[in-house]
Image (cartoon, rainbow, N blue to C red; front, side):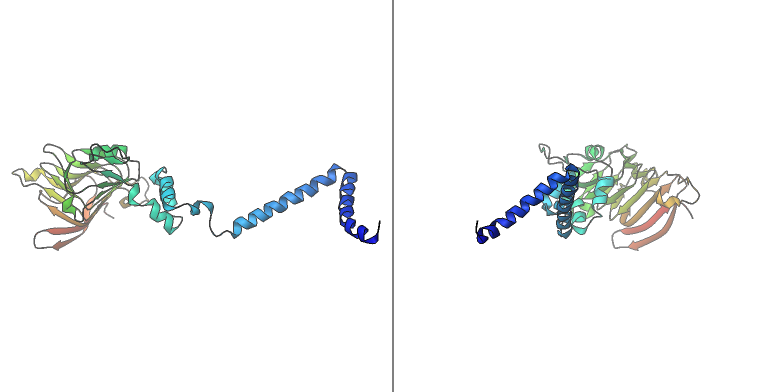
Length: 287
């Protein structure tokens, strides 16, 4: 064998020598070598994942992410997802995830669409938002809401979305949990528009109407029977049982608010317009 042939074979012989050395050293020497190789691969994978600017879930498009969010419960899962980043907040709170009430959708099999408010409320999960379609009057008589919900009128103005309470009913909506009403008109006769039992009720940009009747003294736009009893002395009861009204037009009735519990009317502000009055006030425990 010439010198040039030996130079070509020398790397192969050297590698074979390493294998023979490892076999002679025994199985105990092989395992650390393999472990080092595996740990090295893991380090490379970890470094690649760390250097990647986006997590795999963020590579999904908006439609896929929104579909995933639709399976989450609004409280607390979807709420916590909205805290991750601006994009997740936009998708987790998107109106496509809201429930809808549309009286014209009688033959619609689209999930999340209902023909009446009572069905939507009973099906809703705590934390859901219900969008009520404008244009038609929706029947609302003694509908009890015992979970956190948000009811929003779908029109540009609150007058475009009306909830009508039938005569003889105690109230249109009865609240036993924290809820929010926005951009809605609630109309009642010989009863009250909203009956507040417990929880924090927020009324923003709505219209509450009590129809003119010889028995007007029996009608009230808002009745609160909440006691506001403190479970612990250090806890402010205004965070549990209270009513907050802002930018709301109130018409008719004996008076705007009747309280039969421990809550009192506070911080009242009124704007006098040409045709109506707009109210801002709080009903809560007196500090």
